[in-house]
Length: 325
Image (spheres, rainbow, N blue to C red):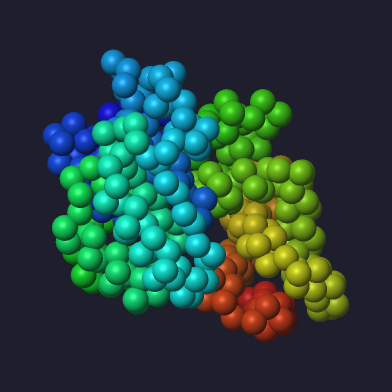
């Protein structure tokens, strides 16, 4: 089994290659990972390998491969629900279940990719379970999901669960620059570091000059932390109230600035070296460690979906408290 656009996650690729080559691929696969880690990309890679009629699979040139890549293959059916609770209804599962008993049009398999499966109602999961228990031999369900805990144990027990991690930053940066000629390796690497190897989020960050904006905001935040009064920090953070994802990105860069400040004598300076140098003169190692912890704690708070205004107020207080103000 060959992977074309899905990089890193070597253990996942080894597992899938074994299942495909030994003809033990299950009828239900759950791909778990945060948005941007390549769940849909991996689902398409599986389809390419199973549908391809070339000798070296996937050849990317035969009619089967071509149709999958263009999203027009009649036996590759993809449905993605909104990412909110109970958005994936039983009606849609019943439609898919009925269609599953119709033989494939062109390929040897019929693959259903169900995106945001964590949004399935309990009723929808139970309806899906009926076809998972006695599926047609040619059917494969691929459920993409951000958290497998949202699925019923009965569905999980009839599926192979694959968990994705962020890509290796070096490999990810090479992949991004190969696909995007206007992005430099250093930019791609830094964006991937910011998002812990999440290629989807890194690409979003690199689009429309967003990375430059994030770097500038992170520097402003760093300087606001050591400003004489709290006003500067409040003014900067208030700008994130309508773009909480921007705050997450800026906090990632801010952490790097704090780390650079801690080890400024032992490493080459980053693009934010001047700011890191300033912080190293004003703050002790202990204070910088506390500031890094504030960044991590704030991201966790954001991911727990706490009210944005509360987050903005809290981060100002926490950053100032970390330096003893």
